[in-house]
Image 1 (spheres, rainbow, N blue to C red):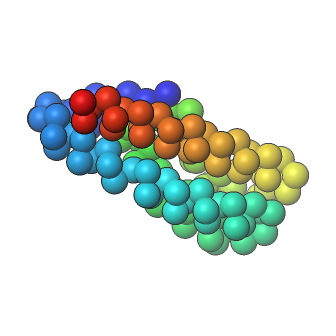
Image 2: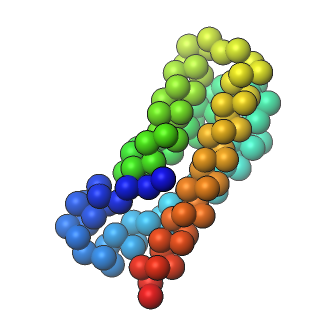
Length: 115
């Protein structure tokens, strides 16, 4: 799910710097997942948009393209207000689930890098 080439490029292939960058992700992901869980009914579009927007550049950084693209779609729906409520909630759940999987993957990467 991830492609760390941007992180390694940004860190100039210094593994400690890359590790420190990755360690910032789990707390951020947890904060965004919590925000989305609290707004899982899809009614507070402003808060959902803020959570999506906060996470979007980080998804790009770790190469989580599928979640990033879903984030763009959901962000656009929040901005325009053009949502199909039931479909929006389903997409939001997919996004949240994707973030939870990403958090697990990043945690495993961190453990591997710390060895």
